[in-house]
Amino acid sequence: MKTLLIIPTYNEIENIERLVEIVLGKGDDIDVLVLDDNSPDGTGLRVRFMQSSEPRLHLIERPGKMGLGSAYVTGFKYALAHDYELIMEMDADFSHNPDDLPRLISAAQNKDLVIGSRYCNGVNIINWPFKRLLISYFASKYVRVITGMPIKDPTGGFKCFHRKVLESINLDKILSDGYAFQIEMNFRAWVKGFRIKEIPIVFTERINGTSKMNRNIVWEAAWMVWHLQLLKIFRLLK
Image (cartoon, rainbow, N blue to C red; front, top):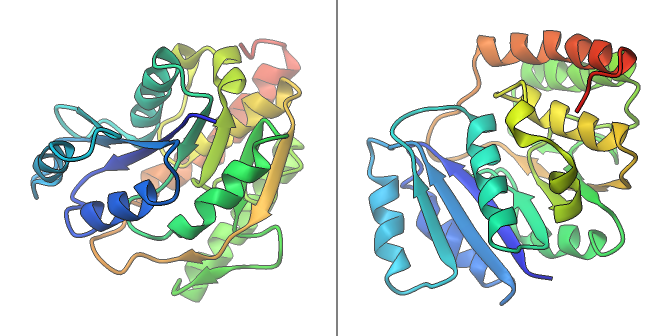
């Protein structure tokens, strides 16, 4: 299936070239879309240079840091407009292993949303401080309890959507932007009855660059689950 992998970037010049080369080597049907938020380190410029020799590499440059959720929504709209069947998400920092891409794509042949899960087969995270690991693990349980979603890793960002999932969601009505965005997209797909599958991955904390996690992102995720559940109860989820 014609596949688009969306990679949002901000100051990922240390990773982006090698990552794109590896990803494009995983299959001739895989294209890459980089969404760069005007990285001061020149990430967007490096991608433009790479485009001169790689027709499967695409780039959207935004004027500044506009958030993870809005980046993915922009990428989703691009994918739907250009007739991609599978639309994937992936971090730029090698925390998601490109070798797992074929596994997600294979699982998507008979599922509507495939999630590369850190928690569906124990806990598979490398190089995280114990405190952060505990927060993430129990946050996932919190989301499951409040929303009722049978997803063990609702905040994971390594995913593959069939286009019909994204076509069914009003992307202009997405409420969240940080890690809550991943919860919201899963929730909307689950409420609509799409077939969801988690497959185990090993998540490795970035080696180069700095994490984009902050307190505001955590709080957004904490209250968003209640908002989504209320929208579901009152049948206001579009």
